[in-house]
Structure formats: C-alpha cells, structure tokens
Length: 359
Ligand SMILES: NC(=O)c1ccc[n+]([C@@H]2O[C@H](COP(=O)([O-])OP(=O)(O)OC[C@H]3O[C@@H](n4cnc5c(N)ncnc54)[C@H](O)[C@@H]3O)[C@@H](O)[C@H]2O)c1
Image (tube, rainbow, N blue to C red):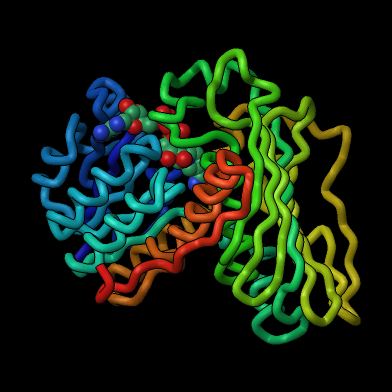
C-alpha cells in the first residue's frame, strides 16, 4: 500500500517536498494545504496534486498516513500538534520551532501519540558531512575538540520584503541564526555532541532599516565532551561566501565541509586525516554566488529527497528517522541560548532535554 502523504504550506520550499515525494516509489501525495487557498490551488496544479485545501483539518480528512510541514517557523508547532492529535506521522521543516518550550511540547505530543516525528536538516545527507561523521566514529578524526561554523551569506532587502513574516521576532522568531545558520549549528552538534554552555552576541548591522531580527551573530559554544566551537553568521556580506563547518579531532586532524555557492552540495574543503591530505577550496571569483533563494533551494532537492526517503522508510519500519524532533531541539536550544546571552551579557547553561518520564 502506498503511503498517503499531504503537504502543509505551499510556499518557496514546498517544490522541493513535492519533487522529493514524487521521486520516491510507494508514496502518494494526496493533497496540499495553504492558508492562502489560491496558492494551494496553483501549487497543486503545478505538481499534479489532486486536492488543494486551506486548512490542516480538510487535509487530514482526506485520510493521510503522514504529512510534511512547510509553513513559517512559528506555525510549525500548531501543525505538528494537530498531526500528533490525528495520529499522522510528520516531517517538519527546520527550525523545529522558535522556542525550546514549543519544541518540547511537539516532541512530547509525538511521543505520546506514537507517531514518527522528523525534522528536515538535509545537509546532513551530503557525502562530505557523512564522511566527517564516519571519521569521528571510526577514530580517524577522533572526537572533535574544536569546531567552527561560518555562515557568510548575502541576502538583498527584497528577500525580507517579499514575505511579510520575515525579519520580525513575532513571525520569524529570529534572523540569520534561526533561519540560515540553524543548518550549520545542527551539523556542528551532530559532530560534537551535546552543547552545555553558550556565550554570544547578536546585532542588526546591515538590514536594520527593514528587519528587527539579527543579521549578524557571534558565539562560543562548549560541549559536554569539553570541546568548544565558535559561530560566526551574517546575511550581510556583499558577495556570498557560503557556509562552512570545520572540526578538529582529538587526533589533530582537521575536516571541513564547505557549501559554495550556497545551496550546492558541500565538499570536504579541508581534510587532514593522516595519509589522506586533501585541500580543495570551492571558492572561485568567477562563480556568481549571490543566487536567488529559489536557486539555493533548487540545489538542495536531491538531499531533500534522501531525507524524505529516510522518513518514509522510518514510517514503514517503525525505526527512528535520521533527524528526530529531539535531535532538532539541540540547534534551537543553542540559538535560544545565544539570544538570551546577548540580552544578559553573560554565558547561558543549557538544560538537557526532558525525558518522557520527567514531562
Ligand atoms: N530545509 C531547507 O533548506 C529550507 C529552505 C527554505 C525554507 N525552509 C523552511 O521551510 C519553512 C517555509 O519557508 P518558505 O521559504 O517556503 O516560506 P514561504 O513564506 O514561502 O511559505 C510558507 C507558506 O505557508 C503558508 N502558511 C502559513 N500559515 C499556514 C497555516 N496555518 N496553514 C497552512 N499554510 C500556512 C503561507 O501562506 C505560505 O504559502 C520555514 O520554516 C523555513 O525555515 C527550509
């Protein structure tokens, strides 16, 4: 029997979900929903989807096994809670939510309903990222003791003005950390383990005349292992230099994954595992790197497909998906702590995720 899947939110990223779902055998897209019904109808027509509706209630009434969530971040919680309530498995776009308390309610609801709950962090599926994870596990890199996240992106003011929800604390929940760097913070924590302490600062230095959330951030993160990492993030650079995550393992080997231009598969720019020396920068001034966000998203379709495929398999077999709600909570907890640290001026200790018994 085909898995019957619905899509909630028919905006910019949703094309990746439709293309991914249509690439996977044994999956049927039953319908799509958007609060703006015209948008849902246009999307359904573009992708050959039978039903277009304006609410999750109507979508769920079509009889679904699972849904994917592509609404703005602050709306993720209500859709995931509704899915859990209806016993529908759910794969939600990143960030899981805009505050950790909401993420905990979502994880709790999914646990109690016994549904599969995954969160989209498709960059983990890049071969270059998987190679680092494997070199940590097999000891060639060893446990990372130092890490570095660098997110040096270009966003024109039109990016923020095109969608009214962007760049406002109440409707976006944050800026460059919440929307862009969350991917690299997720990857950093996937490599380095549980973060325990954060010290950070944020600013609005480039886009202040049209957004209120941060467009620059700097932070230091300490992990339970004793390892530390820095985060530098902005959407204000004139020429987009992409995203890089670097880790230095206990063996002294350095490995990095560099995404340039943005949205293209990251490569191992630095790889100094003994006997395997590779230095291979993707930076090239001849490349037009200030891409439109639609082009950035389009470059990620193959990796959305891999993660959606993993999710469908997790639903069928009952195993955990590659990125669970609990995994996705970690990057949000770091970001929330950077915001708090920026407000208080001091370091912030992170609370471990509550277990089911504690809730
Ligand atoms: N994984 C990635 O690489 C990636 C890339 C881009 C966006 N995203 C994530 O996807 C989400 C959506 O981003 P986007 O750029 O597509 O936004 P968007 O503004 O283009 O689309 C959001 C859509 O959700 C609809 N919507 C809002 N509230 C709704 C509700 N209650 N019910 C149904 N529909 C509702 C809006 O009408 C809109 O059509 C965000 O959380 C973003 O972080 C992820």
